[in-house]
Image (cartoon, rainbow, N blue to C red; front, top):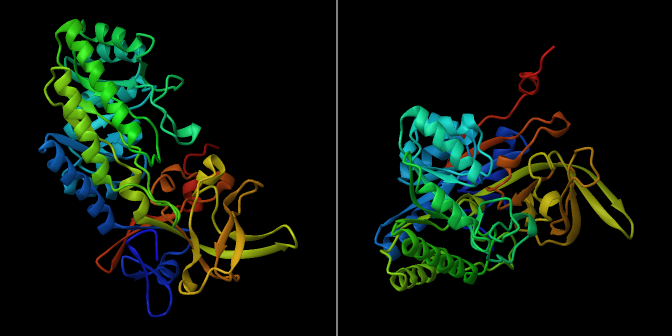
Length: 433
């Protein structure tokens, strides 16, 4: 019935998450409200860990892509489940460290890391820094020498693979702000330079071809291209790069008609390509890193709103206004992202209306979904947007000086506050007179 296993309906006909009534959660914590099912998050993490065991003999690491959803409670779960995390900023790194995360299991990404961020990474002992460009390579070398530390690096490579996804979230093609291109010789030139720098140890390569990808073939092709390049490095320099980070980007189900492949199927097919191509290139099977983010937290989250004004424009559309909007979910205005919406207090009723869900920001484009099927909607209803665990809280803003919502975790029939709701006092905390 639902696009996520953590959702159900109780005897009152209300939507539940993790066995708890969303209507009661909305009453207890207020709206807008992000709610995350901790059991499903852990279950998704464990499925990726098991696939590393099954297809790579445990010779690998799951590194949660924290840009999908980051807070101390989330990093604590990752630590507890024994996986790594990838971070892309000093703020994410700082939060992970504050949560007690082991720095050796942190992978640091980013196309324009600042000197301060790189210094923090070196001084705290981050396990792998993914270098994006030549200027960063030399900047990092200087920081490592000044600190008297050896630093393990990987290069982000653009494998030239079309990921068949939205242009804003394709990252593996030559025209991307991320990484070194293979076609131009840029990637090999970076390897040539890195091998001359004694403070830096080039341990492997990284690629990421995009996000919300349903096809497995682009992942297979990317793995083949990357291993062929690793073979080229061995032929030219005699250097064996022993780690391969294949990134993330696995698609999730946002609408009932979406049908992504099982993640185990992806892991099995890609592992076959990895082993075959490594043998062809006379390389040892590499230590494999993967970076799932959305696929771990996306299906585990929902956002709850209270319905306010309802405006019917005859022959045009009906606007259903909620007490949140683009400030807590900018993905529709950015990508026209699909979402399944429903009235949480009428979960057993049929969807008989088609509406546009509008936010409260002073923007005509502040919409959450257009032409959305929904139950009969009235002022005061609790409206739920499903599969919002990824890139909602993490992309939230204070546009129009609206405080960001709270985040609640549910587990085994209990709820706990993971991130408190911002107050008006929070909004002015950094203001100067």
